[in-house]
Length: 290
Figure 1: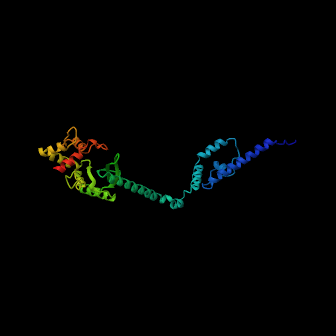
Figure 2: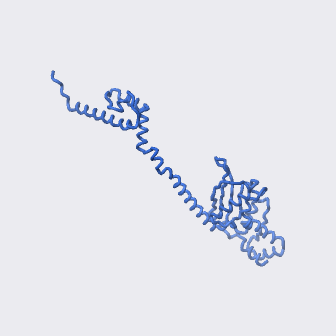
Figure 3: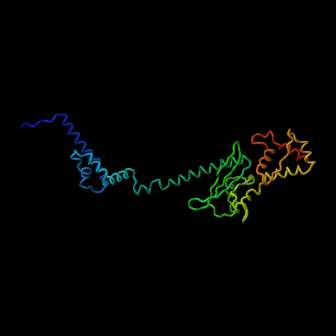
């Protein structure tokens, strides 16, 4: 019987089939180099390629779920990414945290320099400190500065591990922090705390030691108001030299009335950036004549 000759389409199909089988074998040989010997069911993916394509999809799914495929793929990607012991020990990962800390320290230093310049331009500031425990149960002390330029600023300048809980320790801590930033502590006009015992001087020192070298602004305003009002002669000089149309007088600051501090301050210096109604000039003239 004469043998039936295959047409061009049939020959092309057989050619593509052999090429696909060769490619499949080549692809699976790459991860096989990094894995252990395959089992009989995986031999088509490790050696020789696929021979029967009738259930190819099912065989591929079984192979992808097998341990040899997972191990081979993992070994292949580790090799490609050079994730071996030698690479991990000699790579920049060992020193990159130092570079990150260096960049962070530079940013912190630059930021503190900017804050220090703004505080010196403002001429005065107040300070706030507070402590809290971190996740390792260590006390952390946060130091915050408040000052005014064209806007009100509240800046965190340091977070420091506390070595003691006495008021004297906090005084020294604040002093050292300000000295490092080259900020004159005599420009500090007030402080704020959480009213804990060690912050209020019930045991040993207190944080108000920070502002001992600075005159109390509110005490000064109160003393001046009392000084003028206690004498009818001085009060008459005030009325004669005052150019205020409403003939306002300086207010005495009560110890329990917090709003009185704000009122006394505004009478003398006026509102921020609006000194038109301030009595500062009248006060200076009156005190000079007294």
